[in-house]
Image (cartoon, rainbow, N blue to C red; front, side, top):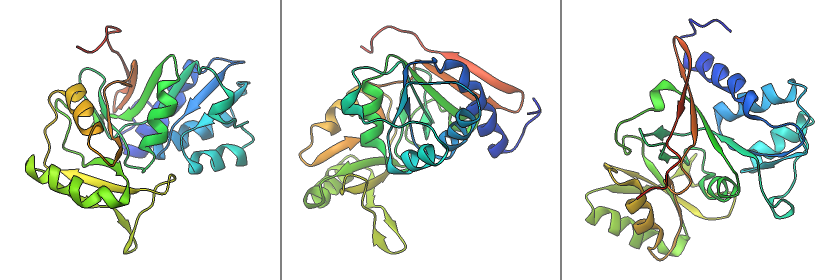
Length: 234
């Protein structure tokens, strides 16, 4: 891949290939969801790296890995993962992220929490100073959706149910997904803690507790590696 890659697709391919060096042979690997992760799965399948097994965050990633001969195991059978590799819709200067554009945020957060290290793979357009330009996904229990919409409205934000082809989207967990616009999330940890406590919220797509340890950022000049401080969030 040329270091003068400029298209978003080329940048995704660059970071997907760069992520292979974080895969530890003979150990369990966590794998996320999305278009950039799909490129990582494809690269892993032909890399020759022998892993003990992969834990997937979505049915889509599970199917892709199985079709390419990558062994997939259930998280309940694994005590720890050496690394979790996933994309992000946004990532801020502290490694906090907005995730869930692919509707897999709950399983992504569960798998990420069991990994020693989170490696985020993204193109340069995903790097922001303040989270919130991308619509924030929030997975909710259906009966709670109207009240959660009202709560976000009281914050000055607009929440709407995600739909596909005119039908309300159901997540892999059988729940609804709200997309929230009009937010500026300057204190990601506080925001995540607050919204997570609202009755009916399954998962909010702010990843502050499970923030990235490393981000491989695809730029026209090549892959930029950003390592975030290991200290706990205040």
